[in-house]
Amino acid sequence: MKFSVSHTAIDVEAAKQAVTDVHCGALAVFEGWIRDHNEGQQVERLEYEVYRPLAEKEGAKIIDEALARFAVRHALCIHREGLLELGDCAVIVCVSAAHRDAAFDACRYIIDQTKTRLPIWKKEHYISGISEWVNCEHCAAAGHSHAEQ
Image 1 (cartoon, one colour):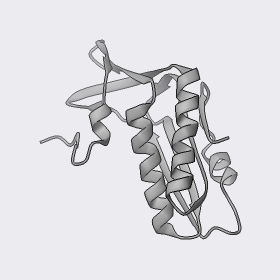
Image 2 (tube, rainbow, N blue to C red; image 1 turned 90 degrees about the horizontal axis):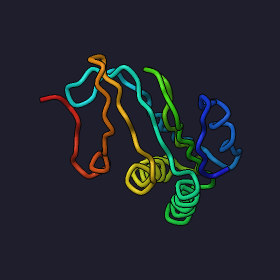
Image 3 (cartoon, rainbow, N blue to C red; image 1 turned 180 degrees about the vertical axis):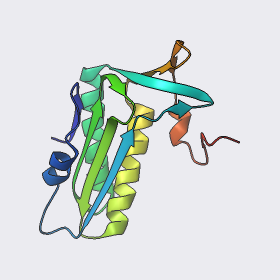
């Protein structure tokens, strides 16, 4: 499994185990969780809609690119779909390599490319009762931050 979409909770430990290798001295993991705020709004839950055929194809391509570009041995990414509650893991990237620099670089590459290239849409449900689809392609852009001023 290189890239997959899951309708059920991500098993973080199983994902890490899937890239474990005695030839590797580094494991880099990125976990993206559902938080309670975004852009000044109080978030109650999120909903992800995924066009699976293209997401899975392009996601596998991103993993292949990372494996070719960086000195890593294994990599995977799992993204959730459906309704997620606060604290749920929405996405995980696991990369193993002989050395940490390659693992960190590949992990960052995979999550950034996933955010910008895959047909995954996010709908935020706010405490106020309002819901809206949000597009955050610019989140992976260099220097962009959602930090409150």
